[in-house]
Image 1 (cartoon, rainbow, N blue to C red):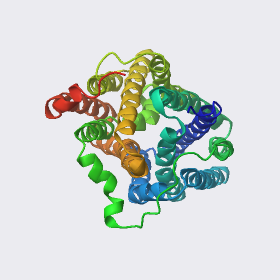
Image 2: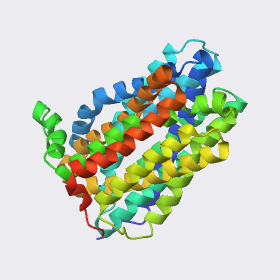
Image 3: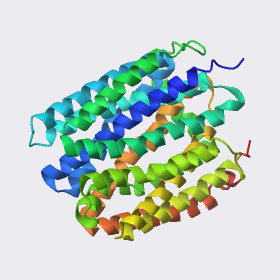
Image 4: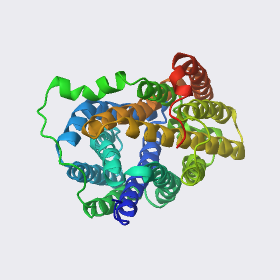
Length: 397
């Protein structure tokens, strides 16, 4: 039996609001930290703090999501996100001149995201099943890409009005998302009351390690986001290289979402022409090549085109990976596998931002971005040889 029609729009609206709020906050935090310190290392520290907060809780969050109602876990995480955003709005409103309070609240927000993202990821296949699921994954990606398109531009515009406004906007957006999640019906099997144990906590990793398809796509994603963290350095490009200010920073932040949204629309309407694993390998290589072009560019139009290609290739890869992960995971392990996957995709991205900041301090901003793109292209070729199963998994559907 198919799911009620209102379910998917409500879920996607919640994802859109949360992602838009996060993107507004990302722009605002980066601009505030760089304005206070003018340090690429401090910019990278934003990613490291989020990584540590999320990574420390990822295995616990997966167990919690599989043990308790996923909607309740998601609602609780949203409350903490809203509180952290309001705290940062207060810091900006009072013109706080030290970075430590920002990093503390970023850590709280990152801890909430350790529960938010995997809970929502595990909810989707419980709400949308059968042949509509791959299309639902593409539409979920479109919603988040639309947020990446709108959020940074809105964040940049709000910064020009007031430094605290983007943080307040994030709190407002996630509060509305809370209401949308609250309206979702309770569906799926009841959560298992499995006791906490070391075996239970690491069962997600054990399952992934035994599945060569999941191990291949997740490890490739880990490498690509770890070395492809050019977006962490966008404030430097906006302020010092392209000299386009905070409004231009919002434009740079939005450009990848233009490509991502276009590819999401295409994937929601078409059948994949190749095996999914091959598509992941090709799009990761394109992502790395576009990163190199962006790193070398000193022209705003060329930089925007490169960022569009970065966003488009990343979206295709992400949608295909998400579909593969969900189709390969049993219901009883969805929370724990989603938590590990979130650690790979989300927190590795934040760790990649830290790596980019350190590399920029050592070899320069341009050198850091170009090196990261070159490593990503190389790894795509290496994974083609190391995981031949990816070239034929999974066939188009």
